[in-house]
Length: 152
Image (cartoon, rainbow, N blue to C red; front, side, top):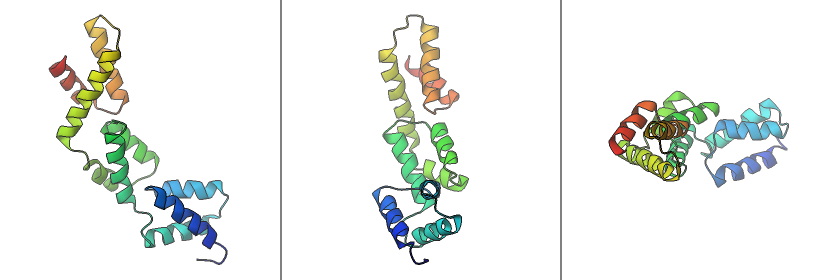
């Protein structure tokens, strides 16, 4: 590490200690601070070496958290991880954190909560609105319609 950059490294260590971060998050923050590309690469390499950064660990934490806390479907999780430039292999590993039965049950919960707030009497319109809502949360149309046809 070049002299004078220890301060930046310490700031990024704190940043990464607070919660899991991706390379993209760290690089974006350093770019916002007008740090040179060469220094950014040095800092990222040091963070990886010291186990502050790990893309696989990040993908697992992100996928599990967004699913359990925000009730996101796999499609939305994949899109957001792609935006953060996470490699596909780590995205797939991250998605393995989501149990299929729990995924199905969470989708049912998402649909039933939304159904309780809808004020639509026409059954076809209601089903379409529920389906569109679930798809917007990142669930695939196929599984959404499977759940809708089972529960409503």
